[in-house]
Image 1 (cartoon, one colour):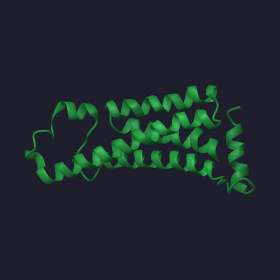
Image 2 (cartoon, one colour):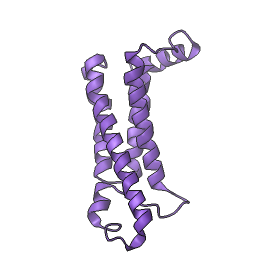
Image 3 (cartoon, rainbow, N blue to C red):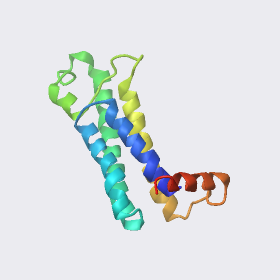
Length: 151
């Protein structure tokens, strides 16, 4: 299950978060996606290599989520009167406001970052405590087939 989460789900979430908004935050997500896709198979996903890739994803996703939520709370309190709402450098970094509830890209971005954070945490702590409940189930067999598709 670990290689399915890290080999498929986490890169997909990082790519989704990177494509929602073009910014510096998305650039870091895209670089993390590329590292996981191309560098990680060469390093191997054994203990140290996996941790070297997952901890930066966890730290960065947590930092981005906290900063974006603080930005949204300040924007909700100050409104459009706040000078930093439309500042070009805030948009360049990747901070977004909710312009329309029909297509709330900031919500999609935050959900993608939050899911990437949870997948990385599940992989790290699930493997540390030996949590592998799918090993002998039908899902375990399905995941091993999915893991061997690329070989």
